Length: 440
Ligand SMILES: NC(=O)c1ccc[n+]([C@@H]2O[C@H](COP(=O)([O-])OP(=O)(O)OC[C@H]3O[C@@H](n4cnc5c(N)ncnc54)[C@H](OP(=O)(O)O)[C@@H]3O)[C@@H](O)[C@H]2O)c1
Image (cartoon, rainbow, N blue to C red):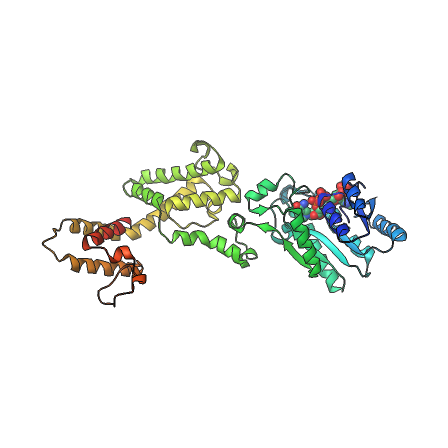
């Protein structure tokens, strides 16, 4: 077990011993292992060897394997969990740092592959990461190193050898992700309970998988933020991701909500410069709220969102808030397409103007109709005839047909008709029509 002094190494060691391994070799550069772990493993009846070895040194690794096998017989399974984490953007990284990140993972894995050669093993397990599957900002070298593990597993299989590379999401309770799980959770990555992760490891080996990704992802949270800067063809093949990315649009099909109606009302009675100011203040206010500022003064109109500290998750949150305030369909890339409050406000203003102008002639005709209807007395018109015409209009407009009963179709069954509408008197229908069209 390389990385035997690490968090995952400990969990795996407990599991293999629990499964009947008679001897475990815990390898790390430091050559230490928690005393409690060793005691626990020995208590379960296993022999524990704690060895110091840098796995990137092939000669030293071959020597360790020879030594271990001379005393206790052939190694049956290899678990490669040695590795170092990384958090530097690609542009800020030096070649030395890159090499260092690759050392344990890549060189170590290649050395294990070479040292064990064509010997049959029960398992050859590589601890990879989701950063290798879909990328992770600031982890370019780490992602590349893990991707190498996935490639090595494929290469070993092609050579007729066993290999399983598991790209893990974050684990809970210690290890490399320690201290970041809360932030990761906020982004939709839920830390795996070690017991659950070990069950998945067990299953992957039982099913003889070659490469596998095991992560607990809240796609509704993760997918919009992950695709805020660019689409992900890989993830969009997952049905949960497709649902997470299309859901807001479907909700918007219900039409603008109360906040959006209010904004549109304000804009329609405002002058052009006022409109500009209203929308700009809306954008700055929402941006400030998501950034945690008390006032929108902190969001200067021409300052870039990225410069102000926006990450993808925050960008999606502002987009969601603006979508609900404007009633517009807005892409998750919004804050990366229009990179300052001023640019975004300008875009929203023109979108709103377009949206409002399409409905404007209709709403003014309805206002006129409302005015005419309210001026009619009950005695001087045939209200039933007008009611029927309005019912037909509602049906054509898309009010569910079961809710409106046209005069020239057979009377539907009770179950098909909205009881309230069916029983509505002409006066009530007039009220309803006014409310419905008043909303449009
Ligand atoms: N924890 C997670 O959430 C998570 C998620 C995805 C993938 N993974 C992967 O799972 C593996 C284990 O993670 P972890 O959380 O248990 O990490 P960890 O607690 O930081 O342990 C890393 C282990 O690797 C050893 N190591 C580092 N460089 C080595 C080298 N050149 N030769 C030999 N041993 C070396 C360390 O000991 P020394 O420093 O003494 O050498 C330590 O035992 C890593 O490869 C990691 O990338 C972890």
